[in-house]
Image (cartoon, rainbow, N blue to C red; front, side):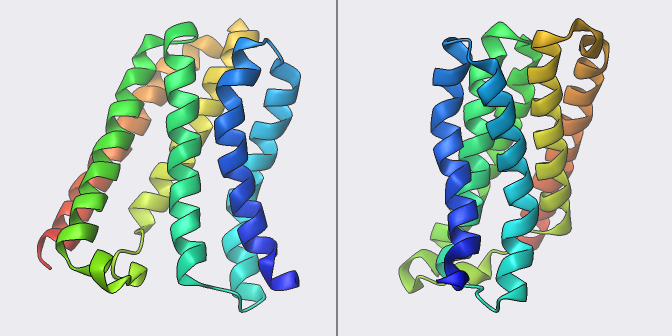
Length: 177
């Protein structure tokens, strides 16, 4: 049972991704804040626990990628209209990376072989994900506390630049294969 904990933590992010729009629009911001913080912390611990418990699996890796994407896309698309239209940049960046990685996954034959290890995330991808989550967190906080609004736009631009670097890095790595 203990070996399932990493996948349970990862699955929690998927649940939170679907709750974000409902909690935001119902003005249940306190619960949304708590769930977002917990979801971001699960991203730190699920991989660590999987390695520690020797419970790394192909399905767990895939679930981690899906949960990160869903959480980011859900938060960005929910926050664009009501917090900062500039968040459209990070949404476009995330969609571009997702499309690129899906394309490489399908065209490499990994999809048919069900080999999810051929397309590991890079260090750039991990850094990009953390900048994205921090940016989305600051966006949400700035909705409640205007003192955070001046740092949001530069953070969005920095995150978008990191997304471009990550996109180019994946293009370089997987474009050769």
